[in-house]
Amino acid sequence: MGRPVATLLVLCFISVTARAAAFRVHGRLLADATEGGAVVPIHWTQAMNYVANFTIGTPPQPASAVIDLAGELVWTQCKQCGRCFEQGTPLFDPTASNTYRAEPCGTPLCESIPSDVRNCSGNVCAYEASTNAGDTGGKVGTDTFAVGTAKASLAFGCVVASDIDTMDGPSGIVGLGRTPWSLVTQTGVAAFSYCLAPHDAGKNSALFLGSSAKLAGGGKAASTPFVNISGNGNDLSNYYKVQLEGLKAGDAMIPLPPSGSTVLLDTFSPISFLVDGAYQAVKKAVTVAVGASPMATPVEPFDLCFPKSGASGAAPDLVFTFRGGAAMTVPATNYLLDYKNGTVCLAMLSSARLNSTTELTLLGSFQQENIHFLFDLDKETLSFQPADCTKLS
Image 1 (cartoon, one colour):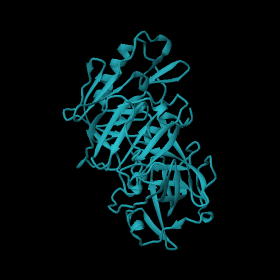
Image 2: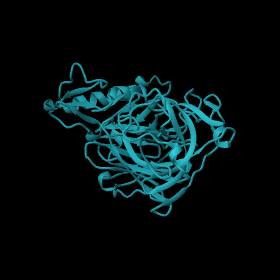
Image 3: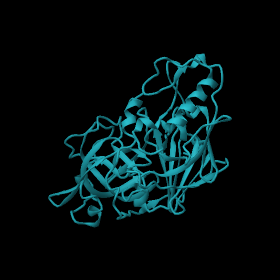
Image 4: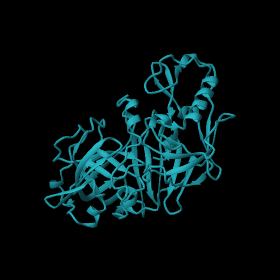
């Protein structure tokens, strides 16, 4: 199945550079096929990530990257790399691009990087960063990116060293996070959306930017405001966050902390993490409903697995209710993972594993399948509706 799921446990809450920067780096959509909007096809990989193919430079050079909703920057490995992982496309060669520009030291773009991770060598702006995949270091540059139907001039990290062992093909990450260096901030779009096709469907998913970001799934849409976390010692400002106020497994109410739970939306992790009390209650409800005896030794990293042949009942839908009454239904097919050899596992874990000091829930990509999510950056709201995502790509 590619990269083991267990490795994702240590990748979910890694901080990234540029989080304190107030300077906003605006590229612009230079050309697109949708008059201010763009559609980016993305596909599932055996490494359990959603990936986009694109090109960089003039003439264009192929690249591919994991789409990371909370990612703070856009980066790819470059030919000058002295310590890098294998990738499925040739390393980007900035010297072969007529439009590549190395960022000098002292510019507003370079100064937007926090001083503790910024350095200069030969008057070229450089940085070191922890990303959701691992630690990277590189030079700051700008070049022309062709991503889906969009063409944009973007600032990006030209990585020359990393401690990442593998990404199973992609050359980097395209971050969509709430940061100055993300794709959505640099292109200046007011909204974006995505619809993730089931990972086992063999169909493309889609990311929509700008005016293309519209809910069109046909199901009932709901909206909830973004929320912020302050005073807890965690800088999670790169995440899009909403407030969970209710959770049900079928007809059973699942207990939450009195104040609810802040939900971090994530596409890098395929599995979700629930606050421990809620997780234990969901685990119990699923076990009772399925009617199969749990495996004495679950498949790592899961806590609950059982033989598919032993199931005598149907697992319940999970209903997440967010602030404002916005209810999102997650069917059993989105949280019971048909792992292998007839084994089915609960694709959720306790947030206690994340060593977080706050009552956090993380909603992973498995649980987001066949739901169209719209992020309105002007209104500061998240909207969503059920959809057949295989038909929107």
